Image (cartoon, rainbow, N blue to C red; front, side, top):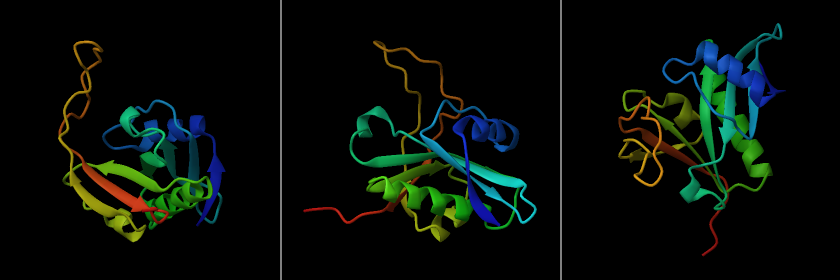
Length: 150
C-alpha cells in the first residue's frame, strides 16, 4: 500500500461512492489517495479550508476520508495529509467525526480528541442556508504540526 496524488475532483467522485453518511462535499484544496499493491485506489482523503472564523490562522480541515475498508488506509491518508499540511506551513489540522465513531485511525495518526461541538445549523436570519444534513454534535480532533510561538 502507498500514498499517491489524486485530483480533488476525482477524490470527490470516490467520496460519493464510498462515504457512509456524508457523500456530498463542496470543493477542497488538495487530496491524496491510497493505492494497494496492484495499483487500485482503496481510499481517498480531501483537505480544505476551515470554517470562515478560523481562516487565515494556519489551520486546515480534513473534510472527508473514504475507503473500501482496506487495512490502515485511513491512518495512512490522515498522516499523508498532515505531512503535506506541515510542508505547506499549516500549524494545525482538524477533522470531525460522529460521536459514535471510535477515532482509532485518528489516534494512530497523532490526533487528539478535543471534545464535542454544539452541532446545529449554520443559517442566520441575515444569511439563510439550507438545513444541515447531519445537525447533531460532532467530535473535533486536532493534530498540532508546529510548536506555537508564545
